[in-house]
Image 1 (cartoon, rainbow, N blue to C red):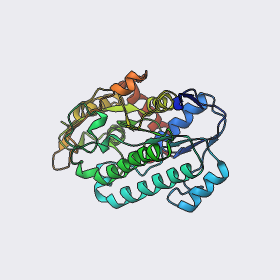
Image 2: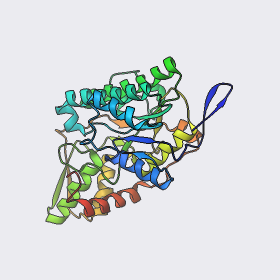
Image 3: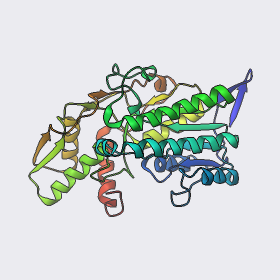
Image 4: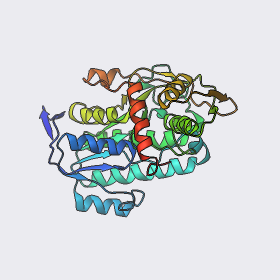
Length: 326
């Protein structure tokens, strides 16, 4: 898995036969990583559902690591949700994510896992961070209040990765993706993020013949979106090429307004009616565009255009709406 130069870790091609644990392999991000690693020839993926392994259970997590002995760990497991869920249940988002992260990283440390990738979220950055947001904007200002508890948990994960590097010298890394979407996303009305929420809302309106769709907020805030298969590709790339304590932004470097996004979704699903905006509902952070210079310099760029990704996600939703999280 590793090479050395003057006693320092040098990332290189991962051993495709090494026991590899994907925490959260059934979620949107984890399932995309699983598909990517399968395509790349990884032969010993360690996969446990929440029913098989509750990562908030510290004893169970340590027992799993003792028995499975993974050599590579990717932490994609997390409690996630949109503005409404984060606003109404901040304790859940703070407590559960802290437990998952600490348990997995402590167990990985105890059992000598050399290479670990922790996945966070772009909500770690201050609400009014200069745009595009550079990695060093972390902890330079107040967070967006609607998801500050979740953000604090993810910041703690970054700090734990950096602490392990300082105290134990292990080459663990962390990556902060922008807004992700794609197959296996959460389409439930109360906990979904903006893009899957729009897909469900417009597709149901089209199917039922509703003449009007009403969306939250003003539609003027700007967001960046990355297809989850691109995210999975970036994860493998970082594991094989990158080593530094600072988190790496993962995104496209391009954004659009939520109103523009809604127009794209409406066109893809075939909705011909009117769109209205409920400005009594929160917008969240005014803009959140990541500076992806570090990632680009490492040699990676996304390959899935947003329009194509939305079409792909709509098709997946229509094929799986009986079994998807709806």
